[in-house]
Image (cartoon, rainbow, N blue to C red; front, side):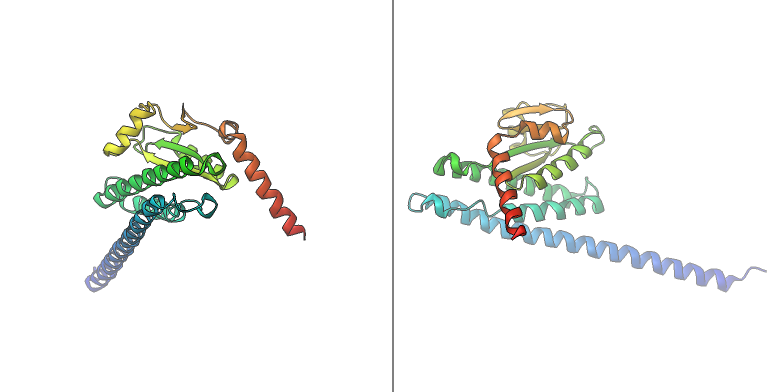
Length: 230
C-alpha cells in the first residue's frame, strides 16, 4: 500500500524548502539593489561636490587638489552591480537601469579628471583605459580581458579603468563608440586615445602604458619596500 501521509509530508517539506529558498534569494537580491542605489545617491552628491570644486579651482592651488573622490565609490558600485547582474540576469530591468547609471557616472568621472588635468597640468595627469565589452555570447575573449584588466589595475594603482557594455542602449555610450570608432570587433580598449581591438594580454597592455605611469608605480613600490625593511 502507498503511504499517502508520507508522500504528503515529504511534499510539504519540499515545498516549504523551495518557497523559503526562493523568498530568501529574492530578499537578498533586493537588498543588494537597494545598497547599489544608496551608493548611487552618495555618488550623485559627490559629483555635485566635485563640480563645485572645479568652479573653485581658480582660488585653490593644484597642490591642494587630490584625485577624484568618485574612484572608490565607483569600484564598490561596479562590484555590487556585477553580483546583481549574476543574480538577476543581464536582461533584468533593474540591472539595465543600474548599468546605465553606472556608465554615466564613469563618463562623468572621466570628464572631471580631464578637467583636473587641464587646470593642474601634466604633473597630475592620470592614465585612462576605456574598455568596451559584450556579455551576450558574441565576445568569447571579453571574460579573459576583464581578468587581465583587473590584474593590470592591481599592478598600477594609479591606472583608471572604465568599462562599458557595448550593447547597452545609451546615447552617451553611442557617442563614445563614434568618437573612438568602436565597431563590433570586441573586446576594444582605448589607451592614450588609441583604439586596440581583440584580446590583449597583460604583457601587451603593459607595453602600451606610458613610461610615466610605470615610473610612478616603481617609485611607490620602492618606497613601500624601504619602509617595510625599516
